[in-house]
Image 1 (cartoon, rainbow, N blue to C red):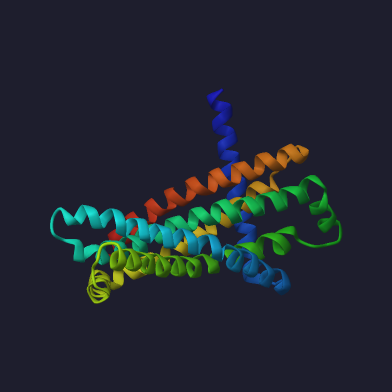
Image 2 (cartoon, helix red, strand yellow):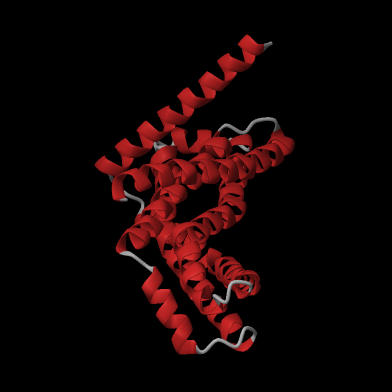
Amino acid sequence: MIQHWLKAAVLEVQEYVRLQGATMRAIVRGPYYWHDIIEQFDQIGLGSLTVVVLTGFFTGAVLALQSGFTLDQFGARPFVGRLVSASMIKELGPVLTGLMLAGRVGSGIAAELGSMVVTDQINALRALGTDPVRKLVVPRVMAGFLMAPVLTVVADTVGIIGGWLITTFQLRVSSGVYWTSVTEALYIEDVWMGLIKPFFLGYVIVTVGCYIGLRAKGGTQGVGRATTNAVVTASVAVIAVDFILTRVLFTLMY
């Protein structure tokens, strides 16, 4: 039983790596389906903007609210801005954006590609001489890789603004004190950490969705299972990759 499970796990990893190799070759060599690439930028980037903005805003607001009352015990309420900005930019912004993308984009990609697999549309593409990886996977990988950092910056900005609103109107701290605290707490290493992580997280989310979608089988039930597996796998991968990147970046930068 354990041996069978280990073989299946190794096979899954092997096939995933194989898909990444084919994707990298297609990205480097071209040609490119520019219409599909632009369409995926719109679906992954603009389509996820609303949920990312709402998540970032309320995260920054609740972070300011909770930390404000806690810091009040030590007479450190003016330092709420430091906590909000550092937390959002270094950790919460990239991770929460990644989790939102895993739920929205990862599931959508798995469902779409899984439906194409079970209805033999992938085989039809191959029969017409079209490479499914170049046509379906590459546009999604490029869009996810490049749009995740943009969405993370939006989430960070909106989160800090949400924290400012709560700090100013709820905690009664002046705007000047809050923004001074925000700028004093940020170091260039923190900004780089917050910008590097989303590239990897976006890539992992999209490639996991593509892989699980292309491996779907068993009709409509198989598509449902693929969608669920994509969300769960991508969410766990986001947290795991975030931990690994944090450890590596701390070693390199600090």
